[in-house]
Length: 163
Ligand code: SF4
Ligand SMILES: [Zn+2]
Image (tube, rainbow, N blue to C red; front, side):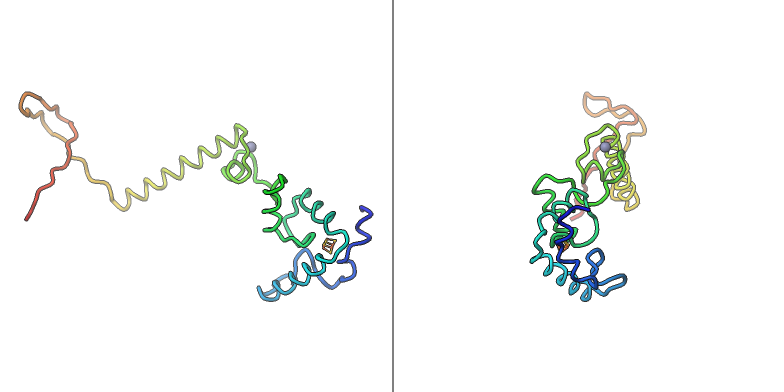
């Protein structure tokens, strides 16, 4: 255990849970009050900086460390070049590529697959809603002036004015 742990202000408040403020099943108001109590103690802690840096380096997902919760750590990590808090997703996944910026071959492929499936899903939804105009196709060849349109030629739908 590092020496500075001896000076941790939270050691004087064993009844406060800094990892899960308010405890398991706390209501939002209870949790907010417990978090505020933790942050207040952190604010006067003599080893706050060491605590905060340690939590950033370990990518702590849970709890209040150095007065910061997960969201705070996320912002501070992005600002000061630390890895984001929490465990990164597996390589080869869309979120590892997009949220963690991994440019490895697996992550690029995982991202491409995700995008392809997403686009296919959107197309399927559009087909289900039947938003596409059914194309008109020539059944037999048709001569238009000097041009001969072959059978199978796609035609633009004609707009017929009804008024
Ligand atoms: S900054 Fe907060 S969590 Fe960290 S050692 Fe001090 S009181 Fe404990
Ligand atoms: Zn990767």
